[in-house]
Length: 110
Image 1 (cartoon, rainbow, N blue to C red):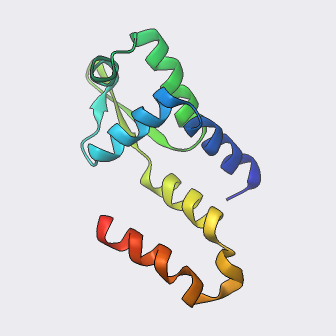
Image 2 (cartoon, rainbow, N blue to C red; image 1 turned 180 degrees about the vertical axis):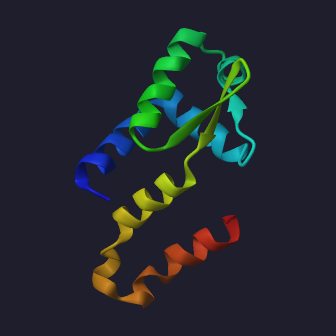
């Protein structure tokens, strides 16, 4: 992952509503949610939600797919994986024993 894409992804997540959207979409993998349903669940106007979803998409964190008249949004787990790997790529200067607590904490959640 390039620095620019990492910065775009982190910037997208650095806003409360967008962070809530991303976490909601992660919980609804792999089926995703319609844009209107996301807006309803988070009590955000649809036009505002559209802007938030666009920012998350440009950050590589969500994907959309048209199904009939609805646009379904899904968390881009490949984008999340790339961002996480970018952040911890040089974890503890390559000392596996120092990164072990991080890996142990993540494993049961996946």
